Length: 591
Image (tube, rainbow, N blue to C red):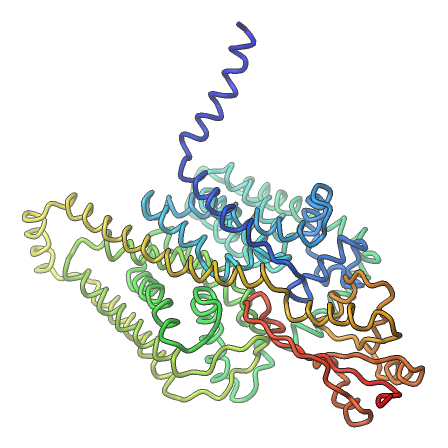
């Protein structure tokens, strides 16, 4: 009898947990079902190879295992998973799929607090259906795991605005999230906003709690920083030198200070192009193709975002919180070149802002005249930005300085800002409008109107899931059924040059994939000097190189270089190298 009672307690507990969170469990199940069957079958880019080699050969940041700044928490989680799966690539892709699915849990819980249960369910389905987030949930990269930890810390921050325990845990989790992907440090500014709110507005919290929050954040950072220094580099000085090289070679050469003249105009164009690319084009379509379908897919989110900004109320902490989170996306916009996945951490903020905009128009704005007014101005702003998207050049991977853009594009952007200002100015409802609004309430009770509006909104959002989900499946299938162009090149070398002596020119996009190869003894040279390539040629080796080899132009002039094969791909996962060509030259070429 006692055994039966003791068994009942945990069963009842888990039953209660499931019963109270059925929607969350179902959303998690949908995430797993839509991600686990589509895991990427190859190393999709050089960073994937770096993470793979960190598991295969050992953690060593100086030797690109992985590249700086180190990603220690992500590599550690991959190492744990690999102890079960025993396959380096599958361990990392499986980790991305699991954490990508789990990301919907904090997203749903946060959205539920902001806009209610029904819209939160629809918004969470759209979150899972987002094509870019979906496809990066299938690959061996740290971006989607970083979104999960970032999303979790954001949820804890928002709840921590009024609850001490949530604030403390938020500090700890934010520190840990930086170790997944160090660019998550931008969320520290959001945490700072929450801390300032404590000091200024919440009387029961004093400076002692802020101090404890700082300590917990430091603990969260120290948990991964100390092992990273001890295991992954030659002490603190060695790590600083690796970071300096990475900063000099990758970051500082592509930040906003490197934009060409005229600087102010090009900064303006860079900002708007990167913002549209991160939050709209690549996020919801997976590309920057200028087609009618692209414009249709991004139009609803433009409308929702314009409605959010037009009805933004600084007295609502939720509006300010989401706005600050969204503004943090200016960190990658101004600090580094364009790459679609760099905006993933901030895509939930844009999605939530658009959903709040829908919520404001459909449910919060009680005055029908004001509701129509906001809708019309938001439509006008949407049309103006759609013209901008249609008539400016595509945003390119690794873009630093924007290409030459027609001046009227800037005029259209400024006009869209003007629509927001006019709409906000018109938000001061006149007394006669209030009287008319009260008369409407007599004819159409508020409760009935809200029910009808809510139904229309939820149905519309559910319909929107279909096209984005279909596009997500198409793009996820590409990487699941076909190898990346870089992986195809390496496979060709493995299969066709196995029986002869050959040397490969080191380049910054394939070196880690060659290192991950199972073919023993691949000789990568030419990272620092072209002389090693000449020496291999004189020794009779076949010298292989991709079109990304830094010495290819000089070698093409001096020697008889021959094209071997070209590989192309269309997945957003291959945005770094969508096309690559293999070349060879040998001493006895004719023979």
